Amino acid sequence: MTDTTPDGETFVASRWTKGNLLFPIRIVVNPLHVIKVKPRLFGNSEESIAIPQVASVQISTGIIWSTIRIDSSGGTNPITSRGHRKGDAQRIRDLIESYQAATRRT
Image (cartoon, rainbow, N blue to C red; front, side, top):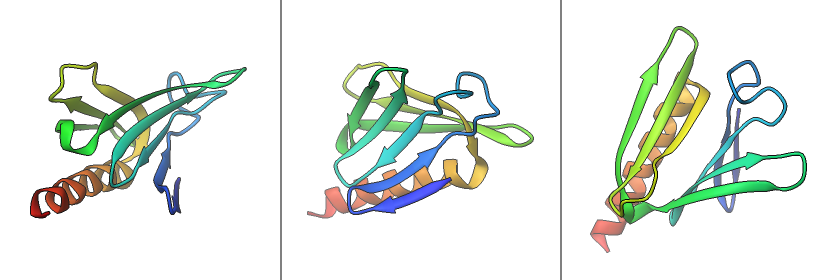
C-alpha cells in the first residue's frame, strides 16, 4: 500500500509477512530522508538515512513479497524491511535515485 503526502510517499509492508502481523513497518521516502517506522504497542521506533548518505538499495524478490535493504555510506546500520510488493520496492528505489540525482544537480 502506498500513500502520497506533502511529507513524501509512504509504503506499508504486508501484514502477512514475518514481523508485520500486528504492526506493519512503514517506509517513508521524501526529498531529504528515507525513514523506517516500526510501530509498537506504545509509540514507535524510527530509523532514518539522509538521501545523500544512501549508498545502495538492494531488492530481494520472492514469489509475492520483496525485501528491501537500504545501505548508508555513513556507516550506520542499514534499513531493512520485508513484505513489500515488488512494485513498491522498485518505486522506493526509483524515488531514492531520483532524489539523489536532483541533489547532485543543485
